[in-house]
Length: 203
Ligand code: ZN
Image (cartoon, rainbow, N blue to C red; front, side, top):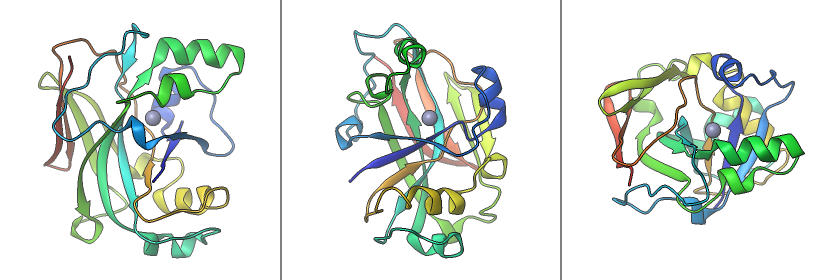
């Protein structure tokens, strides 16, 4: 399986990193080796001194497809979850400056937390899915699918022009504002509406 990630999909996060609003979705990949095993902690890697959390809605693909028309996108997923796209911001800034690919900062081992999933039809309003991240019991990030620059169905259509989507593939749909550095001892807890989707300790 593959993990397709969308960057710069919320205006408030684009502003906080002083990025410019893209004309098309920013897309990058994480390998399956980046997923944190169930019930494991996040261990800060030695190569970075600035790991940021990015909480994101995650779409699980359940049907093979390519060149998917936006009007059919909703037939390609049944579950929506929550995860964290961990980012070595110091390394990413360095790579960005040089115009190099982002993988060392985004795709390293354990850079991808995949929490629980909810069947999409159980969500009251799929165009306004509210989610949040608590760090040590304080809400640090919150957003809604309604704030996405490109909505889930548009993203599925867009990425499927480049990558064949396969069963089990995940799409990380971008993060709202509030990204910040994590340190050893932090506790990260994610919510969709009032449902707890994950709990993760930082070591
Ligand atoms: Zn992200």
